[in-house]
Image 1 (cartoon, helix red, strand yellow):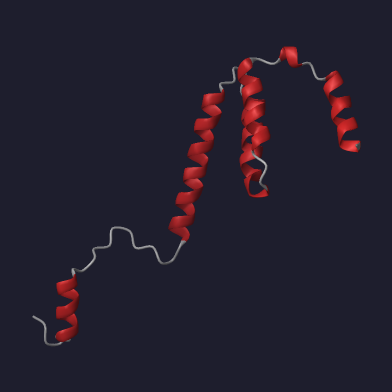
Image 2 (cartoon, helix red, strand yellow; image 1 turned 135 degrees about the vertical axis):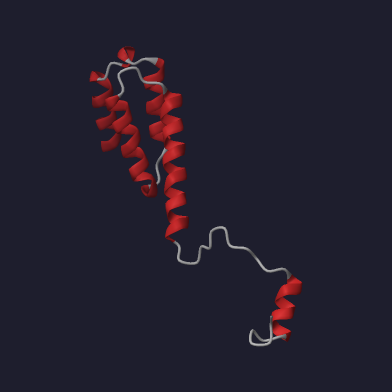
Length: 106
């Protein structure tokens, strides 16, 4: 009940008529991101909303996708087991290396 009363109080002074369609879309986008793991993403969206004068929701979505992609790439590169551009031996090469120790190969 306390939350409902707080929302009613805030909605009384908030003027939805001053919002553009793009600003409203951005706020809806922001309200759908609820996971605590996405806190940095929410902060990024709020910062973007605050900075942009002529807000375009599509630009915010594009920025979020780039941010999440970069974050995922960093996690992959931070993994010690990643071998970028590593060539895999064929099954026949693996069998030959088992049958002939390196000292016998030429």
